[in-house]
Image 1 (spheres, rainbow over the protein chains, first blue to last red):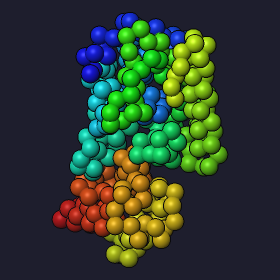
Image 2 (cartoon, rainbow over the protein chains, first blue to last red):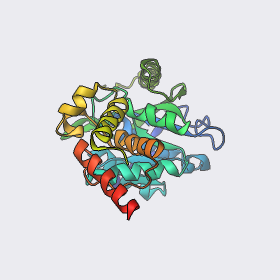
Image 3 (cartoon, each protein chain N blue to C red):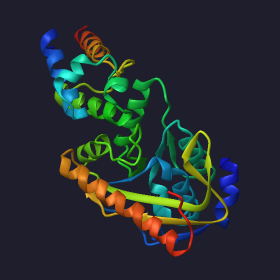
Length: 207
Length: 83
């Protein structure tokens, strides 16, 4: 499937602000965060934006899920730096995250891993605060796309698909309810922006 | 190294803060992952907090998903340091 996505990537028509330098090389460290269900579409964005060297400074973190495996396969084929977190042993996985954080690089990581999906969990904003990093929500979706069993919330774009991408407002890390509320609101706005871009193309995002 | 009860109290408080839950839930949980929803980023936060609070670095915790597992890993680390 990742080979199919690799083949598909040059054909996908990208809409949105992906070209507007949302991936700075300098300044505070950034944690790009997104919904699990957007991970395949975001991997395609990475492929299309591969000419931007700043994107290559972002280390993409994926887990051992279907979407994670697809993204890892696609990202690796395109030469991106992808860290694949192993499902077990759990202690090793935690150490992998800790090692990643020590590298001081900007990362891309899902913010709702473990569910409920679509909802910001407290762990990433807390980690961002510990690192002095800012959180930047990103959203991507494609249409038409085909839901894949047994994860129907993950859509695989079909040939001729339009891919919509949006970047939310940056939020400082922290663990207060206010930080979580602001991050959730920023993520929701990015998702809605990506969705409305598809609507304006007369595409049904089916989300 | 702190006493057994002190260490457990410290860990319960630390985990409760990192997971943003009540301390009673930490004490009642058999698995921090399955009962309390701890993910690998939470676990990394706990490891960082142990570094900050106790000066423990590069702690190997095979069973980081249980309170007893973290406690025994710290004790083993302390024993290694004292020999």
